[in-house]
Structure formats: structure tokens, C-alpha cells
Image (cartoon, rainbow over the protein chains, first blue to last red):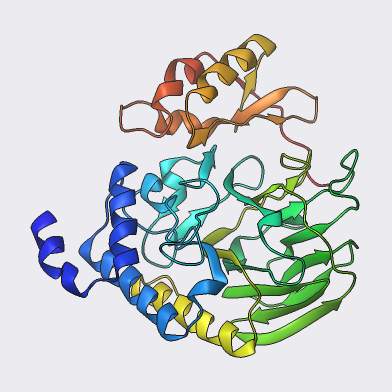
Length: 282
Length: 73
């Protein structure tokens, strides 16, 4: 296996090679097919000229739970400042929660206790330039779950000065809700199946469902708090909400970064979709 | 479904968690205000390669409970 990777490495993207090495250091492993798929994804992102929009991205792939918790990107370029934890910190997931390939490929929450901590501080991004994105298997959703992002609702005192919400969640297997303002008012996206949702902006926020413009919010912009972004729950005042705050969904890739326009969102979705297809997850 | 964590077991857990940067067992409060944790952690702690191997003895010291988390906000 090692010799194969060395021989073929001449055509692999350097960020894919670096990710492979970090997976090995985290006691995981990567098949040659997966490594090629990750490399293809990196080339697609570069070709779309959106690499600097992605400050943290995890494709949730590799041979094991340990492998899938190693993010591909941790900064806006390979050599730029890196943000957040070296791996997504595992809170209560077990090996059986993760499958790399096939229709059930991805990492699945349990709706009650399991989540990841990216270590990525929400205030890393500026007030007007931020996005969240996530791949969902909508059929695995539960009602009224907040599971990607931060809020400081009811923090005492709220930091920096006002309550903010920056998160995605679900109402059901057919609807996603999102918040992105100093108001708890939600945007809603009606959808089902396996989908990708990107939320771009701040206060005035545009959602992109499978790369196409969807619903919007026009509310007040916010200065983010310093809480790190959680996945499978929301980081409320430093920890998951006391009740009902965990998602049950199976997820594929997530990203955190700068805002995207419609062309960039479409290109990003196409890169994500191609990767998911290569792992037979669509 | 869930395992019950006593206050003493909770203190021990903090010590074990503190020695691991990339993974933590993070209890949740039950609807009876006790600490509980998902019992499938027991399925992934038996071998040195298991995710929660370093927590094995602690996990096996816990008792099953019928207590559950609050359902929704």
C-alpha cells in the first residue's frame, strides 16, 4: 500500500497527501481510491478558485472513525494560519457511527449526546464575510434539532455584547432551519433526500440548496462570539444546549469559511457532489 | 440506552478526559437531573484499538438506567 501511494503521489494534490499523513498520525488509514477522490476534490476547488473561501473543511472519509475526524483544510491555504483543533474532537461517537462508503456513508449522530468540537472560533471570521455548509441525509433527521454552529442565547452576559445565532438545524425530515443574526428569526428550506446546504452572509444571509439560491434572511448583522463551532449540536455559551440540542442526522462534508457568491456556491457544490459520488454516497 | 454516572464517577471521568485532547466522554443531564451517557460506548472500548479503550474500566463501572435526556427544548 505504501509503495503504491509513493509511486502515484506525483499526481496527487499536496493537500491530499498532507491530509493522508495526518490521518496516519491519528491512527487511521486511507485507501488509494479515497486518497484519489480527496485529491480530485482539491483540484476541483483550486480550479474553481475558491480555496481561500474554505478555512475549515472535513470530508468525513478514511477507513475509520479516527480517520474521518481529520479535517482536510484548516486554513484558507495550505501555508496560511491554521485554525481550530487538529482533529474534530470526538464527544461520545463510537466506531459504528461511521461508514465511509455507500448509501449510508458518513457520520451519524444519535440525537441525544454525540457531537464534534471543531475548535474553530466563530469570531475568526469578520462580520460580513462568513459561511457554513453541510451535507445532510435528511431522512435521518429529528424534529427541532440545532446541530451546526453557535449561539449565545441566554449566556450571562452575552459576549461580545448581544445575543447572536449562527447555526443550522432541522424541523423535520423535509425542512432545514437556519439562523444568522442577532435575532432568533429563522430561515427555512424545504427539501428532502441527501442534500447540501450552504449559508452565506451575516444578518443578510443567502442559503444555497445544492448549489442553487434558496431562501434568505434580511436581519441585523452581528459580531460573532468566540465560541468554537460544534457539529451535531450547537455551541451555546460553551457547551451543548441543556435539552433537545443534538442532531440525529447522518452527515457528509462540512465547511466553515468566507462568504460565497452564487457562482462560487455552485462550483463548491459540484466539487462536493463529485466527491460524494466517488464514495458512492449519493 | 443510557448509563448512569454518579458524582464520584463524574469526577473520575474528568481526570481521564483531561489526558486526551482529541476525544472526550461528555455526559448529559437526564430529565431527572442526573448525569447519563449513551451505552453504546461499551461497544467500542474492549481493545487497545478501540475508541474508548482508556475509559474501559470506568465505563464498565457504570450501571444501566432507564433515565433519558429531555426530549426537546
